[in-house]
Length: 169
Image (cartoon, rainbow, N blue to C red):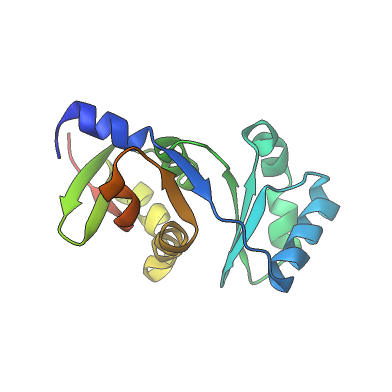
């Protein structure tokens, strides 16, 4: 799938995140609001990670409170993610603190693979997390919470997997 127009159309898809609030998520929702006075769009808990999705206009204000949130929730790994509407922007918001060199679309028989390319081992290591924990949590979110508004019927049914790879120039 190396066609530029197919890649562009795929990455510019509108994404929806299914909102599921259970008691745990509601507790984290309330905690976040008490600390930041920002209402998160939604919260996803995938132990030990807690993902707070905020509107893009509230992102930098919420990021200001990240250290305090992590201190108060010792033992949890807190991530603040911009709730973007397109797939490419959402992918970049999951990997906010690292330099992403490129994003490629790879077609597989059992789904779609998005290859996030990094130039440095350190950036890739941060993106993957300890023992692959962060990338596994991101893939869990894409499998269970992300859906597409797409004109491609095939894409809606295919699961999306994200892989982090080191590349060279």
